[in-house]
Amino acid sequence: MGSFVVSSPCRTGSTIILNNLLKNKNNTVVHNHNSEWQPPNSNFVCILSRRKDRFAAVVSHAVMDATKQPPHTYSSTVVSLTINVNRFRNLYLSHKIFYSKINLDSYKQVVEIWYEELISDPYYLFRELGQHQQTDYTTIPKSPYDYSKLITNYVQLQEVAKKIEQDLLYIK
Image (tube, rainbow, N blue to C red):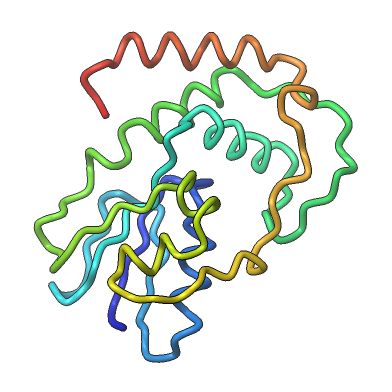
């Protein structure tokens, strides 16, 4: 298929994309969480792994940080958790501005892949890349947590996110 850079601030389904692209041994794939990173040449397709529900992505990121459980080692042993509000705010801001900092001019093509479509349509990823193939979802487990029950200050985090969105309306 080709050379790809999967760019994501974290917790947007980028690992599902990465693992599926790596099934083709002819692909070169870079998994990138640094919005200022540039490809070595212009032969790369930039896949922007995005999530419509930014709050869900950031909460997932914050839980992963707080529990020190990378996605492939999730266990449901954590009963409750309080997320540091300042850490959450910083993560939220990072997620919000991530895509606006990427220089897309250095890529031969840019494709946006939305998490919500990725997990609901098994053909979505490869259709967007001009292929007819199903996505393999077994490559990474979904978090076992119900964040609204796990996080003791969940409502406070929702309020913080809402405030950030209102204050920074001009950033998509």
